[in-house]
Amino acid sequence: MDRGFDIKLVGGKVKRMRLNPQAFFISDADAQRCTFHLRGASGIRPCFRCKNIVAKGYGEVDPHGFFKEISCSQYSQLQISSDAETFQSIDHLSTIRTAKQLDNFEKSCGINFRPFSFWNDRVQRNRLPPSHVLGDPMHIFWANGCMSAEINLFLAAFQTNVGNIDILITSLNGIPFQTGGHKGHSAHVKRMLSAKLFQGPLYKGSARQCSSVMWLLWYAIQKLLIGRDILVKEIQSFSAAIDICRTLDRFTYSTEVVQNDINLYLHQVDRHQALFNVAYPDDCRPKHHARYHVVDALRLLGKYLHCEPHAPCMIS
Image 1: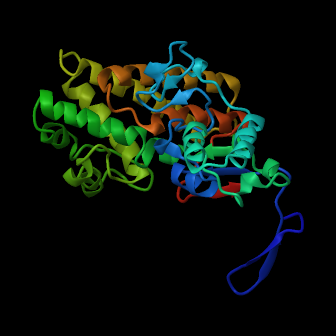
Image 2: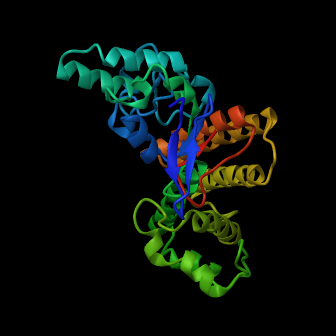
């Protein structure tokens, strides 16, 4: 790898590529699982970056309180693994002799043993260490992410406790709403608010549509529900999610993210996670935890990077 490798470009031109001494890998969770052989949600430890975050149901058996379930709503309680600790676990996997012991350790460390994986190469692995494997905010929040869940969970609660969601949707059709590349055309708004996109646990529109629908629903909530004694917990959760949307919008157009920005973001995620746990106690998803690790990229790079319009990507 020190000598590099050839990539054939369109038109037949060949370009020699070499890795910098350090690189970053930004992608969705599926690409991370495939590339680095992570267990993900199938393991006891669903987050390979946190040594004390465990899957739902496992935190209750810890009498000392070290382990926290994936719905933990305090960043200060997370115990982040160092690269050296993660590599130590990977090296230990190669010493295990029985299939059962190997399976148990893979579940507990969150990484599957593959003898020819990148992180098993002791010479090269420091070029792309675990701390440089970064979650993509577009997938964490907007593409089958946290905000996708927030939308459909709120609408499900509305349907159960208030009435048909058509009440909300009808109030939004025809308003002069504008997004990038669109100027409030009613057909554009109707496509984002199509009934088929609200079926199931997650909003099924694109990342950009999801972002727009969050603001559209917040407009409807303020017009129709604020001040009424209904869906109080759900509205509090949605309001906290909107605060995060505001911060992410600002990050997107900022040339630099500083520590005060990170502190605000973490405070908002803590607050939303706590309110979400009250409103929807059984609906926390791995991506709710993954958004805590957005700060890894903010601290390492000083910028807010995401994979829109495509993923994964390599940045070096």
